[in-house]
Image 1 (cartoon, rainbow, N blue to C red):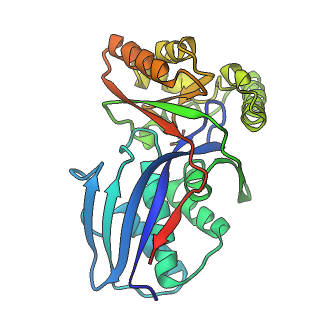
Image 2 (image 1 turned 45 degrees about the vertical axis):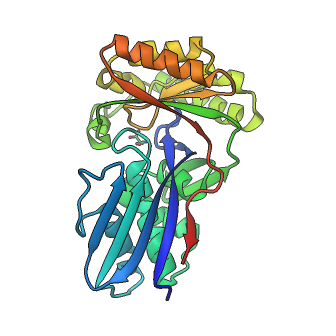
Length: 299
Ligand code: HSE
């Protein structure tokens, strides 16, 4: 059994507009963890979340590692975790999924359980409650998820796009943002979203990014969540006007993600200005897509 493992996990943007709980894309922004088996739990956090993340066994990386050990029938007295975080917390960029996947990959490598990625995906989605951030965090690239009996996660190549993430300076909890949606939607909205999610995947896979402008429109979750982010609609319009191919709420927000081949700096500036006009301070990151997913870097 290795003494310690280092794991790197990417940020993710989920939904991509119409693909609620279905589509996710990995981004080249990473959290790294070093995990050891120890006599008792200990946690050190650097970077994002260093002021607020728990320092005991309730930390999501350790809860996830513990679950994998329990399911594998292995007794582990405790875990020592050192975490370096670049993914902002509770902003819609998959920070909790990155923690879950880091814990599962770390425990799997430390304990030598060598679980297939499909089993790690099932465990990760069980902990997270939805699959569309954990799947691209595991596989990299674009992943299509479908829960029907079991969970299917189909990894596809990462599109050659840059993602401008406009990150407001406030948090939105996914749990709260899932409660604002209605229990049922009109049939016409179901048809609308089925056609838009298909167009989005087709545009991403063929490189015909011009279709993302329409393809990323959504009637399933964004209209119900827009009020949680002042200036949401105007910021989406500004990103498109400045040259983005498509734009969407990143996961449950508050980050807004714009998808570009050119003009990313202009898109970023337009999004920040428009959010500020609505009273929201935001920073931006211009990110490449990640093609590798979670990686054990060393033992
Ligand atoms: N599909 C999830 C949601 C993603 O929109 O609630 C959360 O990041």
